[in-house]
Image (cartoon, rainbow, N blue to C red; front, side, top):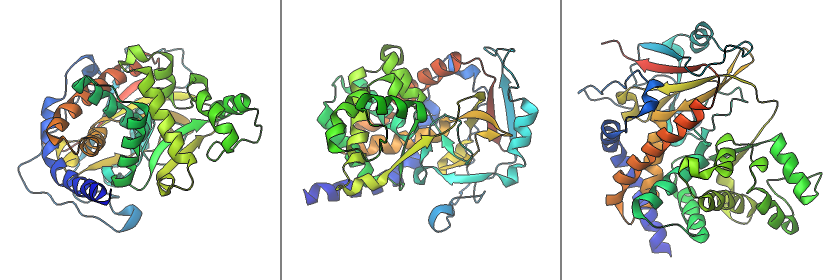
Length: 364
């Protein structure tokens, strides 16, 4: 009803107002486990001085370093699982040169930015997380199920996905696919000229079923989740419901919400040479700012994970999904943080690439 949607918009505005307070709670309660060996540099505590976030108009309103006073970038290598047989991996010197001077770093307003996946097939500076925006949406739903001991139905997942798209702070919601997955979908529906973003209605049922296969996913996280959901502590039915909801909204061209979808085709071979974990200080997180980094380094691909920034996105998603039960939000975000740490550990432990933690810091 009109009243219900009005309440949703009000709640969305309240979320932005209280998220600064939640940052401190979340940072202090983030779970500690084996993933700490990958993110050893600790997040810097926010100073007790007022900081003001300044914005520019439209797309670049949060670019460059307006209020986040960062003075150095520290690169910490971890070669625990590194296979020295990998040809031409990203070196620490190359990464430091790629990052450049700290004053030249471009910053993004986290809640006004789409999160890409950790797939490195791109050149644009970006924020990255496991699965992109859709991976974080799934993560929060999974945390809600575990905290409430109640499973979502397919209809409830779709309804909540539409709710978030309606009131989210950013303009576009990100998910990706690659050419191999497209080829599998074309084979499934016998459609050599398939446009997966707008297929014929007669082909949608078979395509929907095909997206439930790992081979039809170009997104690394969703491929892993479909192959072994138990390892990631998530119901396969929930993973499928989230995938179905994404395609349902994208395919419904009569629904204005489909314009909020950003579906990216990843081209070229996947040949990562490193994995980067980005850490930002608490006072940058409090201003909702995170550094944008290109995943391409002299034609070398690097997976990019902005874990601190992703906490802010989870907080917004949880606030929207739990607008009728705001008292449950903190527990859900903390649960989502714990699950994300487990997911990241599984991904990092499975790679033979060099792993680097890139910490943006202020000199004490």
